[in-house]
Picture 1: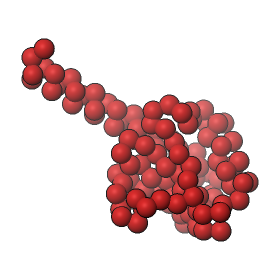
Picture 2: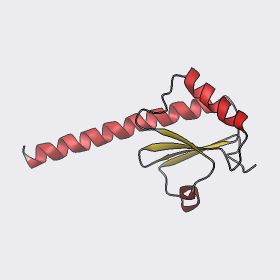
Picture 3: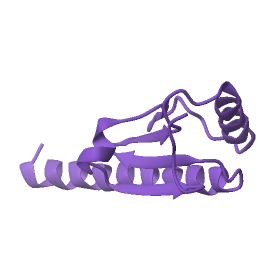
Length: 108
């Protein structure tokens, strides 16, 4: 395959993938904003992280799961969505985009 053609295809696929991830990120943020719970949503390196805070109550996780399921947002499809208590990338500001819902996550 011609190198220019290969580069063109590779770059187009990368842009399409980024666009799909951004759309999913926006859908997740929109869905979770309706809950008005303390959550920080990070789009980073082709993944989406939902930070709920250390020792968050189980009810918070249940509400998130039910809300995403109701909106038909698949957690296992690329990009995968991870629900975590905390992250070091937030402190280092290594992310593409961040949205704080309900003032962002808090530790319990």
